[in-house]
Image (cartoon, rainbow, N blue to C red):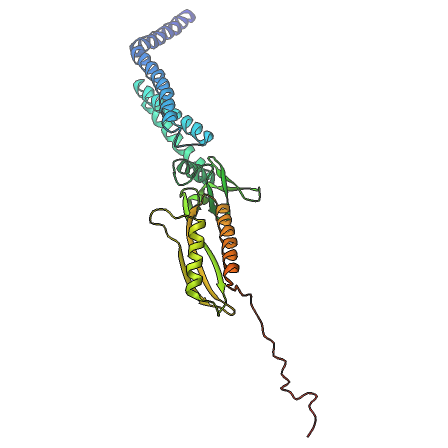
Length: 293
């Protein structure tokens, strides 16, 4: 009886192994095809990453973002190959379970890293945004300076006082920013005032000539002069002109040169630039120290 049980067990094991061997032989072509597909997608991912890096080398100046994007693209291509290989092995249930698990894990990670992912996708958008590049002088979120770094989390701005400001990418995407470097020339404004006794037409013509000589205008550009206010001590005006500007310092330099030139020209013509004057009346209306009648 014992020998009979042993023989039955051995027979069952033999049948089971035979069934596995038959399944292995029948599934061997699909298994080899799945391996070939997965290996092929691995090589495809490599070449797709290299192609993307070459194409975007001029568009994405920041190496960290470009390399990270290449890695993400490679991972996506390899993952596609993995899912196709599972399908060839007829592992539909396993594929469904993997996709379901990936969805749940992705949702949990997305909720936990909502702010980080927002900055990451914003960084990818900034990488392809021609209006913002490394080396540009920008004003944004109350700060102004040169963009020194753009990564997947933030941008770094070096201010004129040599301090660095780190701003999250989402803030740059959501808030407006002003880029001085994107335009080679900008209009500069200088405000001044002359005395009420001045010949206003002469002052206008003199100022226009001084600015035109100092800042040659190009094409349709022109120097504009407008009186705009009867001030307390002067008649005030604004003169505006075009010059090369790629950062805020260029505006300050242009204003400085214009003010010096205007002051010299006014001194030569005797034009007065008055300063505020306050008149104090000391009349004795209260009758203090008046002799009594």
